[in-house]
Image 1 (cartoon, rainbow, N blue to C red):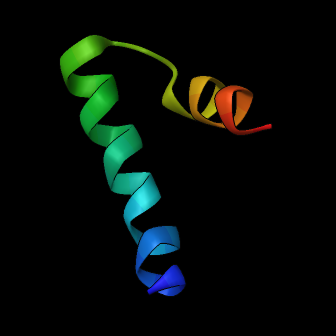
Image 2 (cartoon, rainbow, N blue to C red):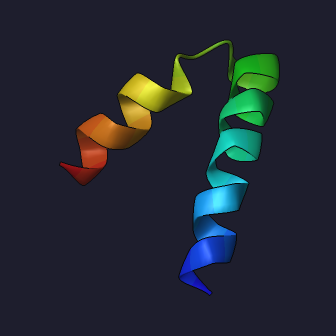
Length: 33
């Protein structure tokens, strides 16, 4: 399950970049940490 989440993160980032034109990684990790 955790492995699936880790694998899916880059796809979410790619989707966010396409739709919202946002730097997903910076935003994602900023909220988590």
